[in-house]
Length: 157
Image (tube, rainbow, N blue to C red):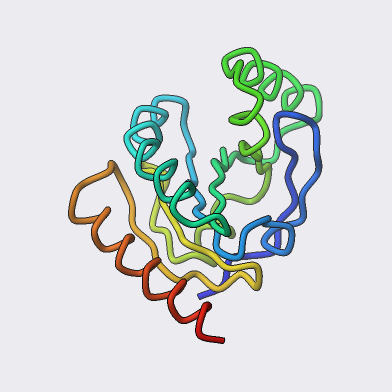
């Protein structure tokens, strides 16, 4: 499965073409659709931070994924998110996508917008691991094993 080619801007104003401009060898991507899902996103925060510290070539991003709105509405949404996120590091890794949500989800085999989705993606857009919903120990263990294998294989090349 491939992460679709999309464009978005982070909350610091930098424009990205994804997946090509993901900055890590491997990238954790949290796809979020609705404001109330921030609690689910936050449930993953400690693990993602720990993994990024363990693997220097791992980056993680939060992708608020929204329908295409007019530029005024997009500016208002982005401004509201910037106002709610004071940390510059978090702002820089939050990339808002305004796109055809159904088409984006179909490319990733995502069935709806009721849960967040957490994906491990390389720069070529290959989805190497995927889950949905809140953090759990079983999901964390599965992800940690996948990363350990990938980084071990990368070191052997």
